[in-house]
Image (cartoon, rainbow, N blue to C red; front, side):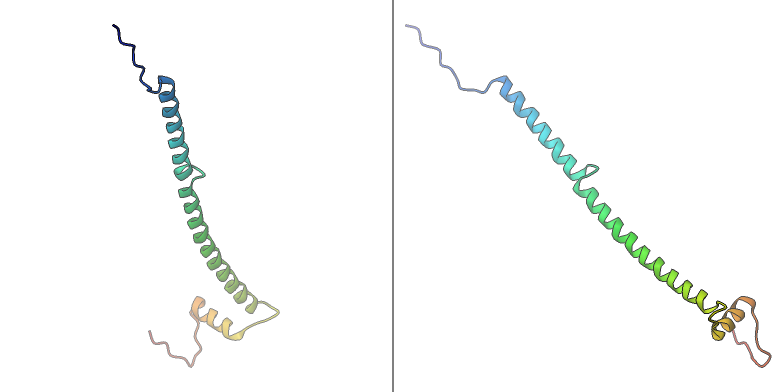
Length: 103
């Protein structure tokens, strides 16, 4: 008497190839979502760069406001004599005849 052949229920080669390709694509897209040009790490870098540039912009705007104030105070319309005296002393090295300089 011959025995009937038992058929094992193993997945075929096509199913293994499908799952391998699906796993590879999933891995690729996960990597791209985290470290790609538009990924999470790049988004964090952009946010940090934005905050640094915002701080630099605020510092430059404050410096510009200070320079505009000094320029206005030395203009023909509004002359601040104390500022003019300070500038003459620091830039030209001028003194009044009754002053003594101690360094």
